[in-house]
Length: 466
Image 1 (cartoon, one colour):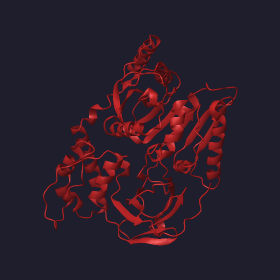
Image 2 (image 1 turned 120 degrees about the horizontal axis):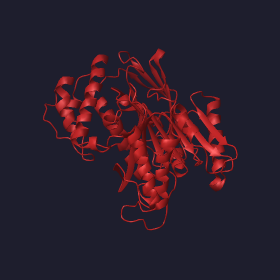
Image 3 (image 1 turned 120 degrees about the vertical axis):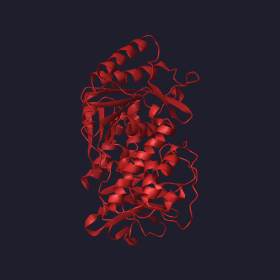
Image 4 (image 1 turned 60 degrees about the vertical axis):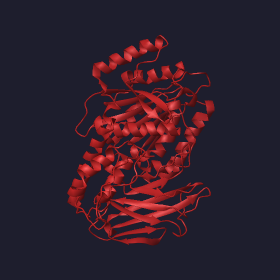
């Protein structure tokens, strides 16, 4: 899922061990600077760098993030997302966009993002003040959908999606009252008009990375919302990308996909729906979704969910309450307990989720990983349950750690399905920090410690809730 960065290998004697200062800036900047998709592995001097103290690891996170940022500038990422239009400039743009749509034309996008083999136009609008920790970011996906009509070589010729795109800009001006930046994308291709398709994952990933790096976005206050087709996108994308979001709201849509709702344990989720919105089973699926979330919440207070059924409404509803609600939450990137169903979305799989990672995901089915930190005993307890024909064979669990989670100056124990799978020291290493930053593009996930555990032979899984 993550972009990768090639490097030019630097000669170093195999027995050498480098300090952070020797291994860091020029080497990592070169590694982060090379175009995505061509990297082989980290430079040897980074992999051979010495274990660090907690204080050294904290400094290494800051400096590695600076190297990552410099590498992103070298690749031109600072130009991917133009500066937001704020205040009156934003409102003037919305008014001009309205005139364009009335004339049957497309509003002029600030830029486009690569979305697989397609391009995703977008605008970035803002209101209010940035705040001391950065801007909140609202991902606002429009309605519309997919058409079989010819749409031209750029895929953006269907006026329905163009009008719905502008409608999101209009709502920014009239109903979305929270201060923040609003990323308002247009469907990348009107013949493939689903927000949750795999080609959109690439666009959203690059957007989040560049917004955090260059537009002052607080990575712990990213909120996802969408209307109708955008609501279906939210309903599927939010559980899949839950660790990257502070909250999510699907409006006038529900997909009925229940298998990975457990991923929302630490991500507040809301659905706004008209009571008479019965087309395509929308209201029924919304009820099913929140009934399932209610069953999880009954024994687990991590879940926050709301189904707001608007009386007398059909498919058209009041969108203001949902947008107001999502902005009231802040992500915790290190929750004490993480639940992760690894089911793919449109053929794409995540290989990391909060402080967990997985290599060798089963080709069929999925795993549900439930992991809890116990700081008093410096222990991680993991239940790994295969589902839908999956097995644990060939899968390797990765547990990412730092000193805010456990005391890495003391031995750490990891228990998987009731068996001690690891007990020993967990070194803080520059290699781990660099890999996590490259994978995640988020300084909150720059964990210096890592434990790798083959899951085959881990015993019978603990039962999970329906």
